[in-house]
Amino acid sequence: MDTLLRGGRVIDPKTGSDRIADLLITEGRVAAVGDALTAPVDADVVDATGLIVGPGFVDLHSHVHSIAGQRLQAMDGVTTALDLEAGLMPIAEALARAAADGRPLNYGFSASWSQARAYAHLDRVPVADFAASMDLLGTPEWQRASSPAERRRWLSLLEGELGAGALGIGVLMGYAPRSDPDEYLELARLAAAAHAPTFTHVRELIEADPRTPIDGSEELVRAAAETGAAMHHCHVNSTSLRHIDRVLALLDRSRAAGSRVTVEAYPYGAGSTAIGAFFLAPEKLKGLGITPSSLVLVDTGERIADEARLREVRATDPGAACIVTFLDETDPLDRAHLHRALAYPDSIVASDAMPISWAETDRRTVYEQRDWPLPSGGHTHPRTAGTFTKSLRLMVVESGTWSWLEAFRRCAFLPARVLDEVSSGMRGKGHLAIGADADIVVLDPATLTDRATYSDPTRPSRGIRHLFVHGTPVVHAGEIVTEALPGRPVRGNA
Image 1 (cartoon, rainbow, N blue to C red):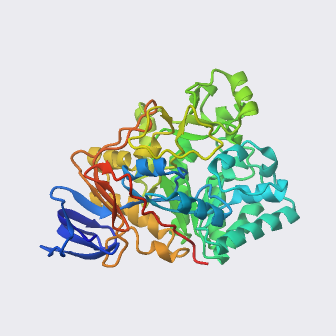
Image 2: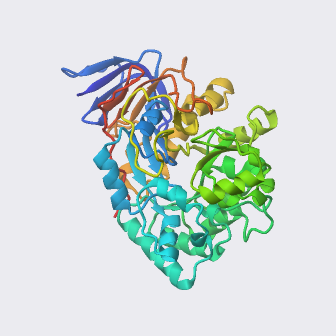
């Protein structure tokens, strides 16, 4: 059905346009933007008076992989949710699983460096399942430096995945920080040759551990300079911690020199990962400025009491998801660190959204919750439900750091442009030009806010009035359209 959005404040970050206008959606695309447009026969006319109409948000860093998780993200304004930091492989299997289940939002994946290395080191056959990837994070053998034969093996596997539709290479370097830095350079050369970006969770900073083979952020900018590859720095807020000013200055110099470096951040002082991660070993916590009590198990709510308990959980269940508090959001200095990560020029908003689990389910099995509203008792990080609305609340509504135009630029236009070279399908996203994909969000600036908390992490955000994916309503009048599963795969250019 054609849809006419009547009288909204239409914002297009591609052209810098911000005006009151009508917007017509026809056959899944933006057909017209103008004054007093005539509604086609049988078109659905939506009164957008007092509302803001813009391109749907593009999340480069989402691990939800479920209808339930994507519905929470839809209520946060997201129309495209991509897993590019960790990735999944085989790509063909990951895309087929998502298509078979159906998705409210567009989806896609990078090729997984960690899974490729586990195959090369351990003959561990990749499985397109995020729970298996989490379990892998506590397995040391894939994390060591590769032999020449192993390196050739995983590079070949990644090259094949790029040819099969991967949107770049996802590099969990922070989980294998004692690997040989030359391997990262070789990986970047592969990416540059394939015209594909890399998405890196960098290894630890020199301030966190002076024994690191190379400072994590320095490694990324060196690879960008030496290879010409497009290098994306994942969640700079959580890897830089209180050293954010030094890291952002480094990125400034790299970008000024012409390197293709992009960066993302999210607005929370806590992250989430597997408790068996290398950097959560008891002896590593001091370098991060945290203690065992900074860690809380997601599924049980247990706060880790001491070093002995941390060692026990890491040994018995290394893939268990935990919340890691690294900055205190009640402390003005720590809030300022988070603010600077988001305020940095061209910093992209990305959620690092995590899967949702319920206490009675086994996180190692595929679990899909199709009921809406979601049943109570769901466990995840609040960033799954609230990253984009919280960013808008903090940066537009409360601080005025961003205009609404700038907010759409950082939440929609810039993330889509990261993928222009690797995926022609992304070129129609993140803007409202005639012919663009009708991935559109309509929000109420007067009521927009995040509502998810650490104690109640699956509360949907408020203020997203309508959300369209390829012209199909996924959110209508502030409510999820439960039968709508219009999400399509985003593939790399084969």
